[in-house]
Image 1 (cartoon, rainbow, N blue to C red):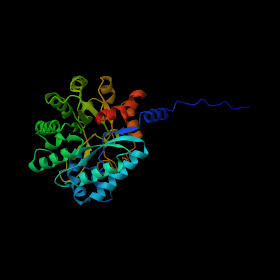
Image 2 (cartoon, rainbow, N blue to C red; image 1 turned 90 degrees about the vertical axis):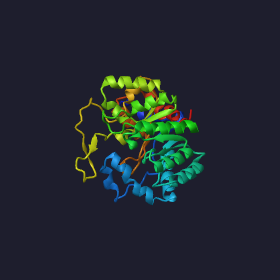
Image 3 (cartoon, rainbow, N blue to C red; image 1 turned 180 degrees about the vertical axis):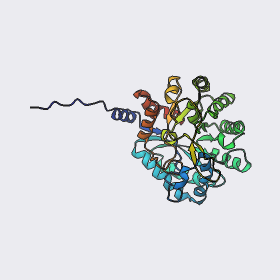
Image 4 (cartoon, one colour; image 1 turned 90 degrees about the horizontal axis):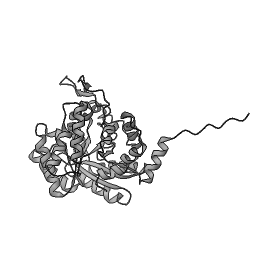
Length: 341
């Protein structure tokens, strides 16, 4: 007896990858390649630290890294992106009083080497803030080198508006876009995206500003979210989701002051996954891109920089199955977020 042929099921991954390829390939809008692939037995325990603790814990790495070390890490990261068919890449680089200009030198060498293979846009990471005199000096130097000026208002806690005013004034003076880390702690206490949208309109930078992560948005009630989406849209604000980097954001600083670590938060909030609410944002016509964020370091020790993994986490966490929109997030939207269209 002849066996009946089994009908071929719909292979959604194959379909999405094929469409991404047709549009030139993936766009990784957010990474930190100068710190990628730095996990070691010595620093692995730091992976359990809270985000704000890690801002300081990476100082040792920055201090001891040579330009050659940084170049090798970045080159390895770019090669991994190219192997996946990534057409454009956004990478933050550290520029501050600890690492000084070492990442700038390495980043320029990377740009020169790969200029025919991939479009690269650099942003200056400001882990020391922008208000302190020494921090400001390095912020200005970094901003003059990179393609996109960046901010981290949480680093200048209590002075977030002043922080953003400096970032916006600098970007306007230099004629550059802005990327800002916002709402990273998955708590309704954070309203940084709200502030970023207001500052975008205040500085008349509509359509030139991007918020990165936005995890705390989903921790707010629906009424607040709806108002926020209107503000975001009115400001022409775009957003980036780095799904695997923040899916674990249900943690707060340990109450033990002598311990580097975190514990589960008991804060009450709407039931949600710890991820930018991409489904709601797209329904409001807001542009969303996707990125890998940190790769194989103390921030994300198990993240390997795989773009399909990031997209898969996004669509599953947000239960978002619109294939055409997912392809746009991975390609067209990414190019827009990086100022390449």
